[in-house]
Image 1 (cartoon, one colour):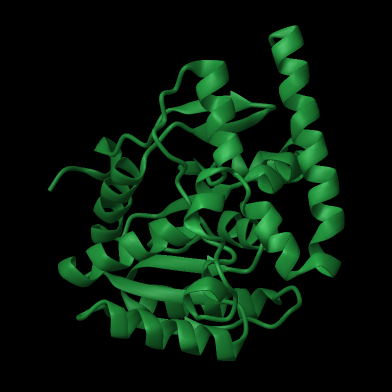
Image 2: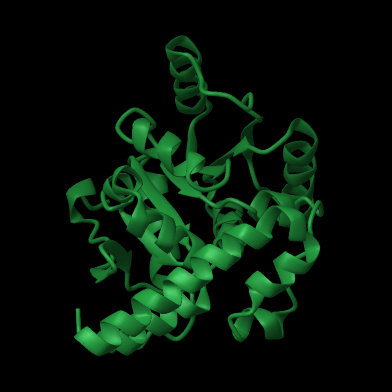
Length: 257
C-alpha cells in the first residue's frame, strides 16, 4: 500500500476565486476509494452554479471550500466555464448524487464502510434501506440525522467519535449548502474518513424528491426542473445565483480575468 502522502488529488483551477477541481468521475472515484480504504481524512464537495456563487461572494465560505481536496464541478455550466477558460476538456460534470452511487457500488465490492449523516430521520432511514437493497454487501455502518441547529461542542465531539468508532471510510453528508461544508471543514482533521458533501442526493436516492430528466441534466437545465418542483423555496436563489454566474462569466470573457 502506498503512503497517504502519495495521493495526488486533482489539480485546481480558479473560477471567480473558487478553486475548482478539474476532475472526472473515474479519477475522483479511484482517489476517494483509495483514501477511504486507508481511513485517511479528506473532504469532497460538489458545487453547481449556486455553490460557486455562494463561495465567490462569501469570503468565509470560500476560505473553507478552497481547502478541500476535491471541489467537483457539479453543474454543467460550471464544467462549461472550466472548459471555456482553461481548455480543461472535462467530458462531463461530477454530479454529487451520481458520484455517491458509484462510490457505494465500489464500497460494497471492496468492503469499505459507509456512514450517512444528514437530512431527517425518515429520509435518512429510507436512504439507508434503498442503498442496502441496491448494492449487495454494502455496509452502512452508521446513519443519523442531526438537529436543525448548531451542535454544541460536546455534541460535535460525540458525532466525530461515533463516526470514527464505526470504521467508516466514506461519510456522506446531506445538510445542504453551506451547512454541510462548514461541518466537514470543522472536523476535517478529526474524522478519519473521506467526508463527501452531497446535499440533495439524500432526498433523491431516498425517493423523497425527483431528479431532473437526463436530457435536462445534460443541457444544464436541472435548476429549471428543481424550480418547478419547489418554486416558493428556490425562485430567489436561482434568480440571484444564475444572474450572478452569467455576469461573472461575461466579465471574465471581456476582461480575461
